[in-house]
Amino acid sequence: MVSRNISPSVIGAFIVSLTVSITLYSIPPEALPFLSPSAIQIIRGTLIILALILLFEKLLRIQLLNKILLGLLFGLLAGIAFQAQISEVKPVGTAFLRLIQMIVVPLVLASLIVGTASLGDPKKLGRIGLKTFAFYLTTTAFAITIGLILANVFRPGSGIDPQVQAQLLQNYKGLATEKISRVGGGASVMDTLLNIIPTNPVGALSNGKMLQIIFFAIFTGIALTVVPKEKAEIVIKAFDGFNEAMLQIVHMVIKVAPYGVFALIADAVGSFGLAIIFTLLKYTLVTTAGLILMTLVYPVFAKIFAGFSPIQYLKAIRPAQVIAFSTSSSSATLPVSMDVAEENLGVSNNIASFVLPLGATVNMDGTALYQGVASVFIAQVYGIHLGIGDQLTIVLMATLASIGTAAAPGVGLLMLVMILKQVGIPLEGIALILSVDRLLDMFRTTVNVSSDLTASVVVAATEKQLNPPKEFKI
Ligand code: ASP
View 1 (spheres, rainbow, N blue to C red):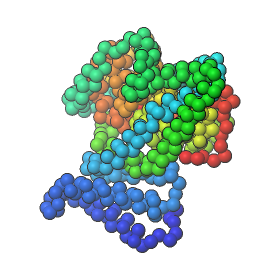
View 2: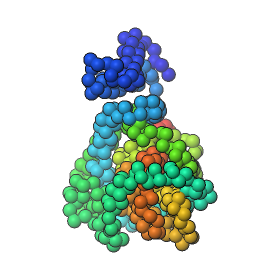
View 3: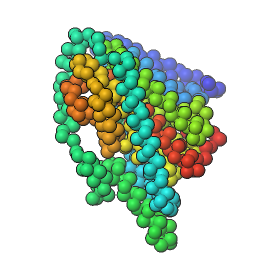
View 4: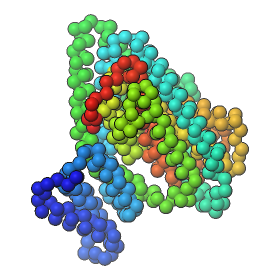
């Protein structure tokens, strides 16, 4: 909706900044010899953001979520239209990303200490933990099975043009080798488990080791229920106040999300170029179709356990989905997911503060589905037959690999290398899929975050700690 009483100078400023920026993006820099190329970049980048600010803050009177969605759409269009040139808006996206990442560690620590302490009963915590893990393992195994079925039925890897294959292997060889070397030998299962116990909680906080932070926060929360009340109370109150302040920061930061999302998407689309999708069209389509299918499974859970209508549910979780899509990081999305769970879905603080940080770290349904499709795809390209035993190994490996792996952009690809190693598929095969990985990361992170949110709803509903509000707050 366009607001009334807009001053003509605002409209003028909007038209001028938009036209000048689009013109500067469209003409070659040589056409303006009096301006250096870097000056042109600064001017057009600043003006396109200015046009967006005028549009969103002065011209349109729409809800914040719609502004974020428009930011995403405009980012997509700008990326397609201006390609790599649009990368000068990236700092706006990076600033937004850093602002939400800034809150993750303090928010998880404070909210989990308060959540555990207010639960009051370690037994209850054990029950919630079991339910959460059961949900995470089941949905991850389900997701990867869908991925494997789709890849076996649609066979995206057979019939790929040998010339395209050779070119992809050649072009992405260096990058693939670098990724493979980053995986190394991989820690043993025992080491991964032992690593959950921090030897230095402050070190865990400063390095953002999520599982270690969760472990320490839960212990502290439990201890606070045991120490004398008058001593526990001040600590809990202080963390509670701190937690509120962190959530307040989320509300402030989310106001700049339309610009951050625009910049992140424009830069991502501009740098990978949508044309590459066509070389790997079948693989990209099969993976995204599986991921979209998966996002339709979660509303069914929300309906069965909590009575949410599917449309209402998808609307409620959309802010977190959009941020996940544009940042490609479940962990960076965490502050927004926690806010969405509490404000839009009515999940109690103690459930949200436990289920969501854990989910961001160990629950990656989208990633698992992608790994299923990708491993079968690479095997098909190489003409390797994967028997039922191999495919079961993939299910097991992908489910286990997601535990203890940080939730950051591109991590799914590194986990894929471990899986390929296990089933004996040539590792350099990842060169085949690297070109579309950034795009698929956006989709799979959205699924990962949707799954975490659904777990929080299911657990809260079965614990009678769900109190959906009348209207969505963010
Ligand atoms: N980017 C994903 C996440 O953070 C992980 C991955 O699949 O690469 O959830």
